[in-house]
Length: 378
Image (cartoon, rainbow, N blue to C red):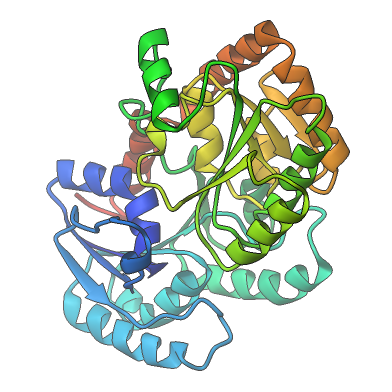
């Protein structure tokens, strides 16, 4: 079998598709990747686990005419590649990839698409429903199997789209990397991040952009300056809003509280070191950083969205709040800071819940999708 994984950017494939590639290699498949090369700004990420890479000049806006060039480049790769499976991902990679694969599909190539979180969702902006829903419904006709990673998207796709729909538990988190640390190891990891025994440390991971909404966490931290003076907020990630977030942190007097870690490829050394993990995102499909936190036994405070609802059970594995509720976030953080037993209990429950989202389980689910029947043969 020869498989082509298509995504808008290479970092997506590096971060999310190692388990898929590993499973395919175990079955003797050749696996290739096609995406725009953005790895220079991703601090050492390498796409070195596939059998070949095609540089495709995608741009992230699905409405950019520059993607016509990307379409032509990708179609040339697909038409001459002899691929048995084209596996598309991300909004632009998913649309352009399926359009470019039409001829190959007629010739017997199977076209898969993983929806890592539809841009339209319950309670989402009407504009997203007007633009993205009709596109995804139309593109489903060019898809042999549509793979979803959360229950809300899965139900919608099964009800509305004319294609076979499968569900997996995310893209798989490696438990050899993300796990609880013993006392001595955790102390060493905290020291490496400049944290003292008395600090109450929060990790917030994600691109510094509007959707990830780190501003709410900054506002919450400002409300905790007096009641929790030992608070440390670690923001891991880079992005277009870094300058604005630094300015906002300074204006709130948080220079000694907030640390900008930049883009990190070793978050398995940070997640076990902190006390809790916080995410204020407005939209998530199924966030890896939350699964990683849970596997490390960390309690989670997260915003209300379908990806967080999938993972965080309010009052059982963490707390769920409105993404703009800085007061609520501050209250939940303070409650956890003042109650170690509560943190440990929520973290333990989260760790048990997260087992379905680990690499071994997701590889089994992907194996079933690829090799369960004669449609996609070994």
